[in-house]
Length: 289
Length: 144
Image (cartoon, rainbow over all chains, first blue to last red; front, side):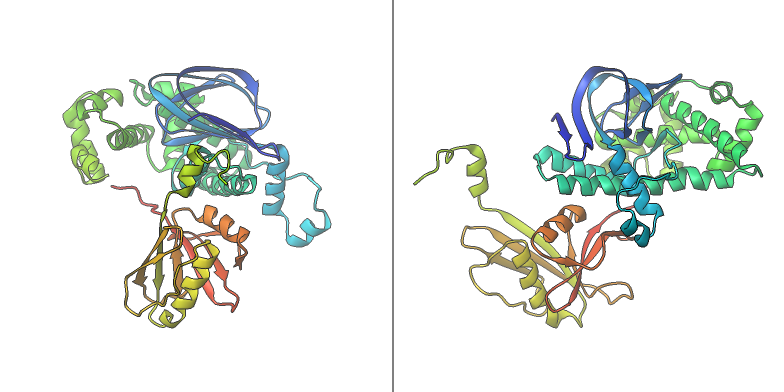
C-alpha cells in the first residue's frame, strides 16, 4: 500500500512498495528511513550505502542525497521526515527542566546536535515495534494526527536510545584521550561498518574496508575491535548470518539459495557456522521462527 | 430511513459483529477489585454489555455480549505480586494506540508511557484512584 501523510505540524510519513524507482537528489529534513523487504541504495555525498530490513537510516537536516530501488522483489519502504520545529521541541524537552519549558515555551535556542552521526543503525527492539505499529496505523488509514505524532515522538525517544548505545557507548570504548580524535575515529569506523553492511554479500577484504574508512589496516583492526568488540571480519560474518536469519524467516528461498545470496562460498560451512552461533541449524531456525 | 451510503462496503463492514479480546492478569489480593476494574475498562473501550456481569474468582475466561452482536472475551490469569508491578494489568498489542484511545475516552494516566524490561507500559487510575497498568509485552531477545 502506498501513502503520503503530511501532518498539520509538517511531519511527513511516506510509504510505498516498488521494485524499481529512482529518487533524484534533494535536500532533506531530519529523516528516518526503513525497508521491510528487499533493499534501497542511498548516495549521500561520496558515500553509497544499502539499506536492508535489519537496519534503519538516519539522515540529517540539510543533507542532500539521492536513492534508488532496483530489486527482483517488491521493496516495501517507509520514510519519516520530522519538521524542524517538532524536532527542536523534542530536543528542548530532553534537555530543559520544566521551569525553563514553562518560562520560554516557544524559544528554540541552541540545542545539542544529537544527529551528527548520519548512518545506519540496527532496526530492532522498541524502534522496530513502534515503527511497525505506526505503519499498521497508516495502512489502516488512520486520520488521527495526534496518534501519529505520538508514534513519531516515540521514534525519537527510541532513536536517542539507539544513538546512545551505538555511538556514545562505542565512542567511550575508544582509548584516546582527545575527544575530537575519538569522534573522528568513530566517524571513520562508521564508514567501515556501513561499507561492510552495504557490501556484505561481496568478496570484500580488509584492505577494501580500510581504504573506504580512510584508516590503515592495523589502525582499523585495533580501533574497530575496541569500539565494536569484534574484528571487521567477525562483523561481516555476523551481518551475513543476520541477513540469512531474515531470509529464512521471511522468504521461501532454499538454504542453498540463501548461501549464494549472502555471499558464502559453501553451504556446509554456512550451516556449521550458523549452528555454532545460534545453536540451531538453518532449517530448524526456519521452522521455529 | 436508510442513508444513501447504506450499501457502501465501509458501512457494511462497520456493522459486522466484532470479536474483541482483552487479556488481564491480577494478583490474588487484587481479585476483589477485579470486578470493578473490568467494568471500568469495558466502559472506557465503549463496550456496553447486554447484562451486568460479575467476575467469579478463579474463572479464566468470560464472554460478554452487547446488543449489536459484538463479543468481548476476557482472558484472565493470575500473576505473582511484584515490587514494581500494579496488581491488575491489562495487556495490549499496541500500548501507544490504546493509551491515546483511553485518553480520548477520559481515562486519567499518572505518567507517560515508559519502557521497561517487559515492554512498553503506562499506568492509569479509575475514579476511586485504583491503579492499573496497560502493558504491551515486547520481546527483546532475538531467537538464537
